[in-house]
Length: 312
Image (cartoon, rainbow, N blue to C red):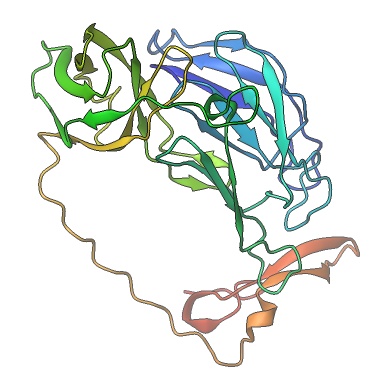
């Protein structure tokens, strides 16, 4: 949510049938090897596991979905209430409830307009807990107290590409952004999300220092690729009230990336026609000890079933 600072929240001690926690911690890696610190911050209002979180352009963290007890491919113990964490206060604020459970295999990503898109949950063949739909949440920063839409700042123009210099002695680079009004603004780059299994591996927000303010604003961009990892980002401008603009897409490129080459596609295994699609789900099976466990029957290599068979 900030340079070298990571928020972790919730979770359970067991992948399935584990009671969730509402604990939250800030991991600060700015001290380098041997200097990492972990600090307790405010607890969530709900115990959650198998949930999703996303960093907003303001540095706040929005968390949705999950369960009070981890139950794979189930809607039981679902948490419908969203909540948002403030880096300024360290506290969580309750938000609106969703109407659909978002648990295992759900996703949450930040949209270009500052809203948040959540979808999925389930993905277990013909199970009844599949949710192939989505909902969009509007964070409080986009609404006035009476529920009307807040007035946004407008980015008139911004660079489409930031080419990071290949010189370790240069710590910052300058870019120029043109705004619609000569008013104070703050800015941040938020990397586009890539979410799976409750982890957004590309989550990254980099606040930008304002060097000169005006209709044309000069911003300092870090040249360190450990901070500003090459990739595609949303560039947001926020006014004094914290209302974000609609973002501009910016491609951050490093000189050592080289041309992109499409990887060679892996061969697709032949699936036996005798394996019906309805077997691709969780089912109960008896183990030798007589205890009931949850087994997954799915396609393995060369069309054999992955459970109970060995594939070379």
